[in-house]
Image (cartoon, rainbow, N blue to C red; front, side):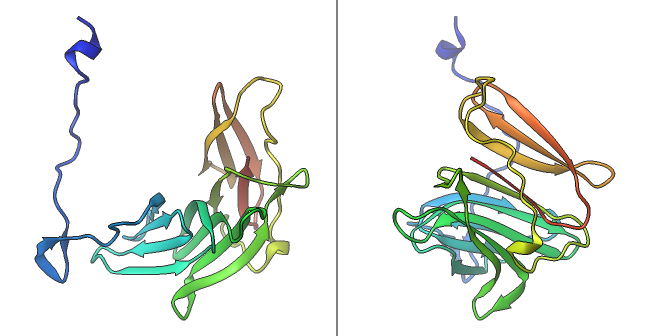
Length: 211
């Protein structure tokens, strides 16, 4: 008898528990009801989670279910990434403000807020071969002692520009991690291959943007 006939084995790694509304414990928490949450990231060093809604809104959720939010894009949010190093928290987002325009990369500093949103340190169009980047994933890593002031403070490096001659197919996802000796490793997952790139750059912010 096949696995399909027997049914997939179910693994339960966590105990499921309903989250109640902090203002009324007799009701369930519906803070994101009706929203199309597209992506999320959690902080390693502090207890909060970042959610991205497809229409351009970013939410910051605390353990007490307090929600801070701001409009990052006028039209669409494609992806977001969170990096934390010590007491520094940086968010990189990718999205579009208007129909037909190039994707826009924005870098937000969660340590500095102005009114109801964190300060946007960088806002720059993302292009490839003079064409707007679409369906792009974004990941961000902080190198210690780097300063994020403007686009000029960053160094860009194209790691992959569309499907390669290796026949690796379309991009599915990517991940940035840190190795020893201030090295940054970028893993690129494609349809038929997993690629890795190693960089050793000290004193700058590493943004790895791959289409």
